[in-house]
Structures are given as C-alpha cells and as structure tokens.
Image (cartoon, rainbow, N blue to C red):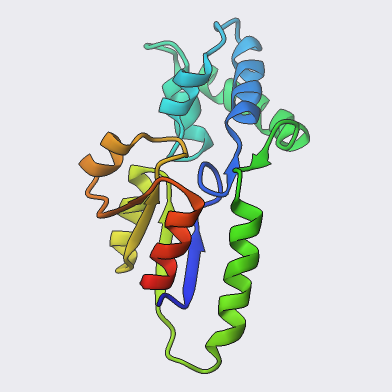
Length: 167
C-alpha cells in the first residue's frame, strides 16, 4: 500500500479549467486577441501560466504582447481563480478515506506515489523516481496519458482509491 500520495492540483483534484479560460480570455482581450474555447484551453494547459499564454496567443505574436497578456492575466486570475473552480466529484470523500488510511499506518516505512492528469505529471513522477497514477477525468484524455507512458490510469474515484490501497 502507498503511504504517501502526492496530488497534482489542477485537473486532478480541482476542475480549474473554466476559471483558467475566463482569466486567459480576459488577458487576451486586453491585446485585442480573440477568445479561446474550453477545448482549446484544455489543450494549452499543463506547463504553467506563461506557457498557457504562449500557446494561446496567435502565431507570430511578439514578445512584448505576450508579456502584456501575461501581466494582465496574473492580477485578474488572482481575484477570479475560484469563481467556477470545484473539486471533481468524489474527491472530498476520497481525501477523507485517505486520511483514515494514514491514521492506520503508524510507523511503517514510507512509500510514495504521484497522482496527476497529464503528460507533465507522468514526466514529473518519472523524474522524481516515483510511481505515477494517472487520472482520466482531468485535462488530458487516456490516449495522451498512454502515449506519455502512463502505466496506471484510473477512470473513477473508486479505481483511484483501490490503486492507492493496492500500491
């Protein structure tokens, strides 16, 4: 059984996509750029806000305009980052169950696992020398996770809980 679970936040525990889209579209509008759709934003996320903005601006946008979009995004998102953000269904119960497992562990040797929803998370776990459990409900679909080398992919909270207990 895994004794330490390290979770990615965006796309794994919390559905932050709508707020990211709102912030991005606000920032894009400050430079006269067209808004992006939810599927577009989903494809752009995964490597931080700067990379999100670089992917979202039109091809050929100069560095000064990219920086202006970035500078507009940060204060807007700081105020509006939780307007639509919610935990994915079942996350709160899963965390309560895991807290009960932690109380039962006592002084056993620590085993850790990284849990995420993207190819970046698979690479992060690999680079940290940790096993990775990928979740399919986040920002990337199953094919992207498989192509990134994900070995364990969970489609539900029950499956994630079982994988954590079995690890």
